[in-house]
Image 1 (cartoon, rainbow, N blue to C red):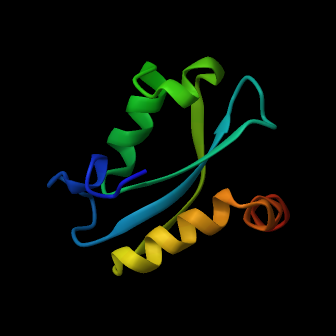
Image 2 (cartoon, rainbow, N blue to C red):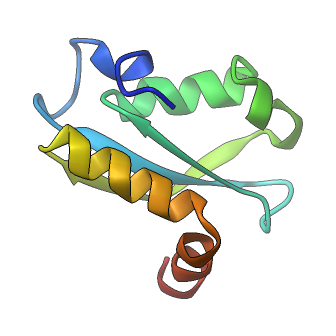
Image 3 (cartoon, rainbow, N blue to C red):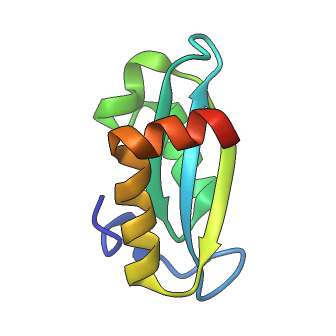
Length: 95
């Protein structure tokens, strides 16, 4: 996900932070989704309303973990890592 799309809104609960988040489906707990945003609550709402194509089939979702970053490049790298094979294994073990 491009941090400039949903990540650029201004009503962030903690201004200046980007959040890398891991969602877990409430109906299929083994189904996880990783994303990046500036507005965590609003983004979760988008996922739960079905506004995100890749998550609409496994609704509703809950936030399993969210990590805040001030550095956008570091946030993007961490999100990419969590979406990799070793990153998914890391998330299952530690989150």
